[in-house]
Image 1 (cartoon, rainbow, N blue to C red):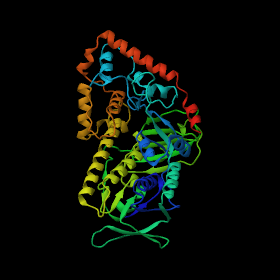
Image 2: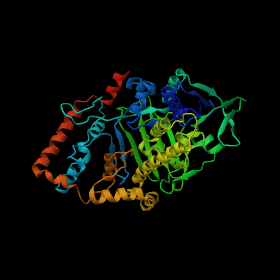
Image 3: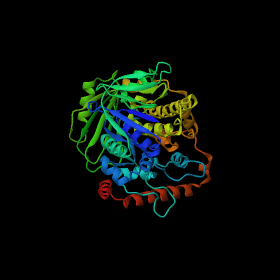
Amino acid sequence: MKVVIVGGGSAGWMAASLLSRLMGNQLHITLVESDQIQTVGVGEATIPAIQHFNRVLGIDEPTFLNKTKGSIKLGINFNGWFNADDSYMHAFGAIGKDMGLAGFHHTWLKAHRMGETKSFWDYSLNYQASLHNKYTTLPNIPNTKMSGLVHAYHLDAGLYAAHLRQLSESSGVIRVEGKVDHVKLEPASGFIESLHLESGAMVAGDLFIDCSGFRALLIEGALKTGYEDWRHWLPCDRAIAAGSERLSPLPPYTSSTAHDAGWQWQIPLQHRTGNGSVYCSDFMDDETALNNLLNNLNSKPLNEPKVIRFITGRRQKQWYKNCVSLGLSSGFIEPLESTSLHLVQAGLVRLVKFFPHKQINAVDVDEYNKQSKIEFERIRDFIILHYYLNNRKGSFWERCRNMDIPDSLASKIALFKESGKVFREQDELFTEIAWIQVMLGQGIVPKQYHPLADSLSDTQRSDLLTSLQQLIDGTVSQLPTHDAFLQTML
């Protein structure tokens, strides 16, 4: 089968590298990209699942960190999202120690009700390590069965794409340089037959993968699949990205700081810092957004900032006829929880599972689209949660606080408010502890806790909390700094 990928960047080369690794003997893969078209290519933050992707490709951690100038990410620190002067972290990994089938947060809620003043995050190893800029590989807390540090990465997306290109071409992927002039469709079926480049070259294929970014040359430009606009829930529609000098010490976490009409990110890499401001153009103009970004950098700017315009939402059909869209061409959910590369990864895994044998079957396409839709919507709800649960002043935040939200999200919030419980679908991306951290961090104190939390006496509960904190604090004190860990990777 001939597979044609349109567009390079992270999405295109992730597709080329995975398909050539898993199915290279069965496929003839061509990737078409133009040197004239720049990718978005900013500093990128990820979630822990990227480790599985790298493992499949045979990329070990030292190689990955070196090739991408990457660093460790233990979570995302949210500054000013509930009130302008507070902060909390969505930390990866476990927090505390669960009581049977009841999460640790129920024990903490009971203690909180009894007058305990310690933060929920005092019992998070990831958070405490982040607070002290510490990290090392630690699968378990020493001498216990409790899980250790759980990490993802910050990376230079352009360098990652370059490394994946090298792997792909060594596996037989053919790269064709050029811009697509027009797309030829088969008259009878409406399937894509071939791409015609400005150079006059023609590239034919059986399956086309659209990684052309916001342009969506195939899935929308040629096939007109339509787009589902989510700006009524997620009104931000602009971003300004800018690099700045390296931070020292190097934080092992991403920062997200709310501002008057959106938020600002900070992604620390080995060689520079990725910065950007996401905002709603109805409440802030480009010049104000740019000035705010530059005035709030923690290091000296390195390049000219660039404005990125987007519409949050998803392609109505992410696989249509013989075209599968990945990355920005398939939809866009702002990078608040670092899901961009994960959605490419998840789409690729799903494509491999539903990969056509001899012909494309409508039932496979329908199931692929059904699963993609559910995945996008669940991530969408988690992002809306951050905006909806705010207590900030200003017209933008008031609009977010008073908007109607999807029923699927409203039911999650209502359940947690009443009982402290979180219900998630089996394959849902964000874990219960992720939902708990955002809802606690942004002002929800459940009315009740699980009755299993009453199984401990006051003394037992106090001893448990004290021993947990001592264990975490003692573990963190023995960790090397994040910078020292990265030096061992060189």
